[in-house]
Length: 279
Image (cartoon, rainbow, N blue to C red; front, side, top):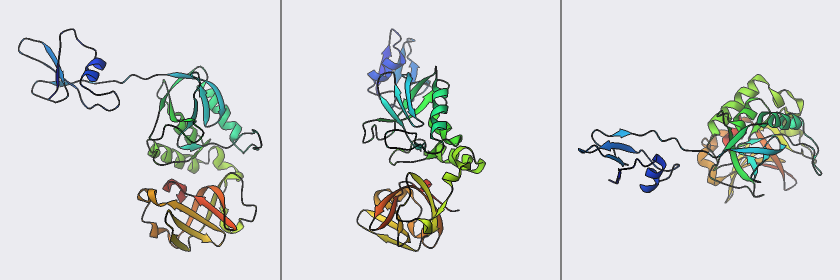
């Protein structure tokens, strides 16, 4: 048992650091007094000790630029990509605006105006563009990522192993779809039968529906084959997140994501079971 005698009433942060822990990883801290009335702190409970309530401190930032509905820049220069969500594109470079893109950007700009936010990071700190990956939380403890989904301004887009807010995001997404808020009332986001995919495919995020006629496997992926021209693929390393894969065989499913060219047809990478739904 590690114990620290506090003659000058060390701050709780100092106590934690001296015990060898940190605000994010340390367990419980207990306070007790000896026969002479001196205070001690330890990481083990004992008779007549009381557990301290440790409130970690947070660093807050202001957002000095909103690029779109899911990407911002902080006042310290960091570019942040909001985790777990995807908002429609706005016009930039060779990208045409998608329905709902400007709505998401405007809502986010208004929401964060004159407010400070803190970042909650997950397993992966950066994406391939070196943007910081995070969930934004306001000083009033409002989860911005979840609110964008709740209002139908963003679709859930889970990237394992980043799963910190997966339950909150998925439930918010269900409510938004059921209430037909935001993008869910737009024809551009309605379900497309897989049989209607042509050689041009579809630009951007899409919802496709069809029946899984075959399940096959390669070294890296499991494939749900809908037609000769379309298949959804799941990385084997994430199969533990999914139901038993054979339960998809013969079922009519909706899958959502982005299309990739594949041997004269199309493929869609499914990263998380929230991207597969039964109509």
